[in-house]
Length: 415
Image (cartoon, rainbow, N blue to C red; front, side, top):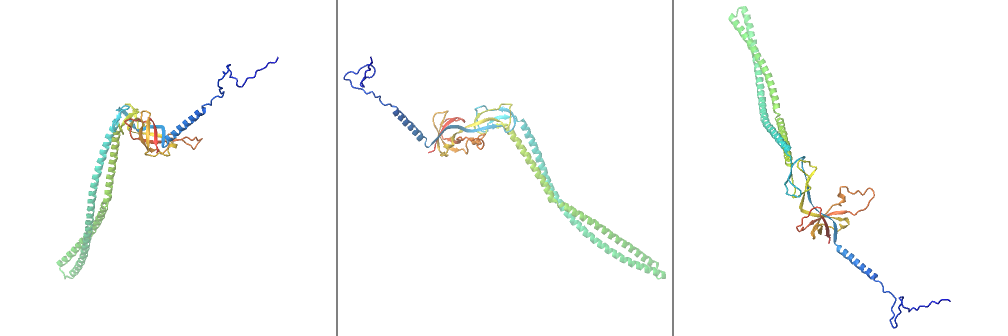
């Protein structure tokens, strides 16, 4: 026999085995709509509001957390090479300008100062001698010139007198020759008269004596001429010699210039010796290493007995009274950055906000002035956003002591 399957009415109650009581209202089988679209819409509105708030809050502001506190740091090193005698400061000690930090062994420098002073004294003595020689040369040369000029005048006078004597002697010779001729004629005439007996012997003797005297007078006159000529030669030589002495004496200017050159040379040596003394004195002063600025000692790396040189730092001094903040902004943030704009600084070390202002913007990016700057002209190039240091001066530190290297967040108000 075939089985018959019963047909279920659409109004049949849901599976569960319970029938709908008579007279009960009919309930719909459709499920209520989900809340997911409303939640998604609300979240989108919230996200949009947050984004709008962030956008509006960032208008007119540039912010970075790449910022550090900076200060003046003076690296201390010795000016000369030497051995450390004493170290007078310790780490974190406060010092003032001029305070002695380190003392070096100064015995070598003291010896150099003594030697330099001795050299200076010797060169001063040489200068005094040169100056005395100059004065002596001036007087001596001028005196010799005057004497030479007088000798020239005297020699000229002697030459003139000798010429006159020569002329006179020649005149005497001429007169003596004339008398000689006369006495010779008288003698010859007397000899002839004696031969005829017309003249006595006494007359003849007188004529012979007169002739002999005329010969002697002529010889004497000729001797005077020879003597005058000899005197003229001597006077000529004397005049030539006087002119030579005059020429030598006329070099007074050259002699003075030579003496003045010796004085100038001595003065130069004195200046050189003085410079050597100053250098030795400076080196003696350099044996005491002093603080150039006021601040706090840090990074002390020197001990007594240590050999130091100018190329090695002994310690550093940090001036904590003048600190500032360097904010490294991205190059995309620099469009509206100008000096004088207000800035807010939040330090990781302290609570609260410090106020300041933009002091200046660096002339280049940090990477450009690094030890190994980027070379983008070779190899593959990957563009990286660069950062530019911006110096922010603090207007009020609120009594807080800022130390170099502290991290900070900086917000610059560009509007």
